[in-house]
Image 1 (cartoon, rainbow, N blue to C red):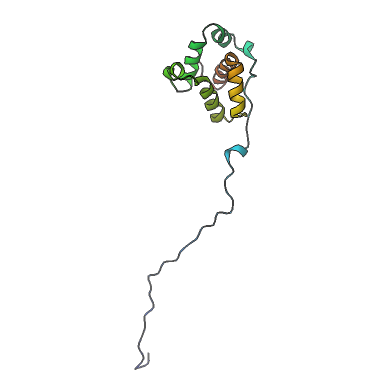
Image 2 (cartoon, rainbow, N blue to C red):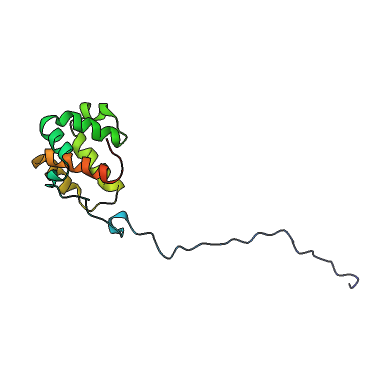
Length: 130
């Protein structure tokens, strides 16, 4: 150190900033791979005689049963006018089944008994038996 010159100390406590740049964005759910089909066709009612008979003669009871097996309870099925549509959409999205909201709406309006039986068969296929 020379005399007469001031000594300036450099700061030792300094922080560095790291910047993270995201290069790849996650794909939207619409483009998600691995979409599957329903385990049975919409008109495959004869595959399960129980759901067929219940769907034809006691659809309200089968709807309550399906709703309870899906975790929604019987009140949802009896109090909500669009319960069958809601249950179909819920099951299809949770199980990654191919389809669209427009298709769900159309089949529920045209073939409600077939939709109800298909939901029951799908839950059976998943191991959620009545």
